Structures are given as structure tokens and as C-alpha cells.
Length: 337
Image 1 (cartoon, rainbow, N blue to C red):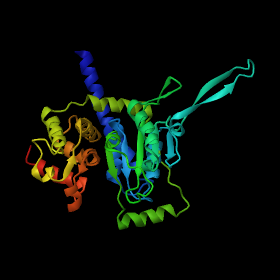
Image 2: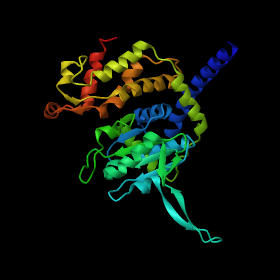
Image 3: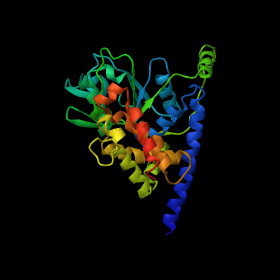
Image 4: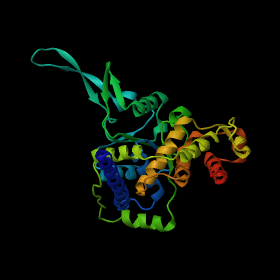
């Protein structure tokens, strides 16, 4: 009984720490990044839920700077891979090289680790490289290991892949298929800054001073907060809402409203239900709350569901996007609970 109380007290302290870390992280990132509060929160939720994220935005919106700053604030090793059409899988995962032992003359294979052996890996313009190279990265994301020469190498912990895509320039690209998009917990849309924010960017980035950021938390402590998120309880009714939202994106499900059915060719799979619940738990944790609510599920739904919904021909003809579908679905869901 005493041990159970001690564990509960420890979790309460960890929950308070999670909320404090979230506040400090936002403050430190804001020293370099102007605005983009929703994107920063989305990245924080993905980190706490131990998921990967896809950032979609036009060039020049500081996606790379945001990710590198986040890694610095979290005191994690950062690696950036610029995806190009000639990039090979071994350029990411690593390769074996032959070395000669000068004393014996024997030749041996040695594995040279690729850039994926870091805590935070930025896959810049992931849709610029062929499917074979994309698959190598996504397999490592799923299994968190790399196999070379019959030997399995474990990737460092914690491990996050944050990939970027340019939504407007599609010539010479290899769009990720739906099965591979499903590996990303969140899709985060980065929009243009407001006028005031853009003026602030122009002032900050043209001066002599370079903003510095401080370390907020170590990787080992971050993993403890990730474990806490997993331990946060969720009410059956909240989990039921998450599942119903996911099932309502499938055109052949009985729960699907007619307004959604017409505009969806394929809906989200069961992994989306898991990510909705995990995302809701993480969102509750950064507020210091012990349990997630319906609002937490609805708040993370656009990030979880939009890239998992394939629009129908009718949707494309009507100019309806996956995010429009999710917005309509969330409005309909207000009457469910």
C-alpha cells in the first residue's frame, strides 16, 4: 500500500514537472521562433507521446530552425538529412566498410553509422527521394533499429523523426503513400506568419545578435515523462469518442455521417485511434491535468486524422480538403457527448 502511494506521489510530481517543462520549452523556443505556437505545441505533444511528425509548409518558414532549436532545448543529438533524388538508403542508415588490421593483415567489415543514429532526425523534403530510400527511413522509424550485414543496431533513445514537405512544388517528387504517411503520428501545417510576426522576424534576423536558448530537459528525463504519459488513465467514454471519430472517417462504416461519406474514399485505420488517445493524454499532461477530456481528443484530431483521410473524386471536384472533412466531422461530434 505504501509503495502504491509513493508511486502515485511520484507521478503527481512528474505531472507537475511536465507542465513546467512545456512552459519552459515554449519560452526558450520563442527566443528564436516568432509565433507558430500551435506547431510548437504539436511537436511537444509528439515528443511526449513518443511519435513522429510530418511538417508541411512552403520554404522559408523556419521549419529546419524550429526542429534544430527544439533538439537544442531538449539537450538531444540532432541530425539533418537533405533528401534528394540520388540519396541511397545507406546514406541514411549507414554502411559497412572494409578495414585492414595492420598487425595481422586481416580484412574486417566495420559498420559506419549513418545520420539516422541521432535522437532527433530531420528528414528535409522527404518527398524528394525515391520510395526505396523513403522506405528505409520509415522502417527504421517503426522498428527503431537498423540491420546491416546480418547484425541489428539499435537506434538511440529517445528517437524522433521530424520530416518536412513542400506542399506547392510537386515536380520531381515522390509523394508518400498512405501506408507510409500512417507512420507519422501528426501532420503539422505551418502557415505564413501574421504581419506583426513577419515584422518581428525581419527585425530579429537582420541584427548582429544571435538568440541563445537554454537546456530545459535531458533525454533520459524526457523518457520518464513519456512513460508518465503512457500511465495516465483515460475514461472509457473518452476512448470511445476517439474510436468513433476514427471510424466516422471510413465511408463504409455505419457511424459515418452522410456529409462525410460523399467526400472520403478511404478513412483512417486503427493506429489513428491509438494516436488520438495518446495525443489526448499528452495534451492533458502539458496542462498538468491527470486525465484527458473530450476537448483534448478533439484538439489533436486534425493533426492525427487529416493525413490519413483520402478524399474522393467528389471532394476534389467540390474543392473539399481532408482538413475540411475533419472540421465537419468535429462539428458533428459536438452532439455525440
